[in-house]
Image 1 (cartoon, one colour):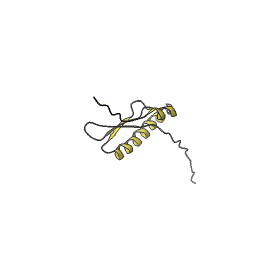
Image 2: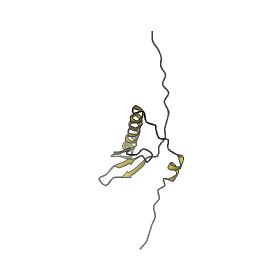
Image 3: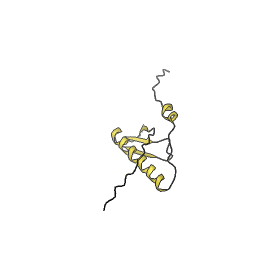
Length: 88
């Protein structure tokens, strides 16, 4: 006799910041998840590493019975980047 067990997975979305590293590649941080950092040699690799870091972070919280942070949409909306030209 076999029993099928369905597990329900919840999808979470987080803002991820990619910053160029001095030595090359990118440093990645997730503001809504304190201490969640990773890096990658290329932007594509950094994105993959961010996905893995977030998944590991959330799995660790679940394992420890801690709540999973829900990012407020205002965090995603406050992250802006622009270049400003200044002549001196």
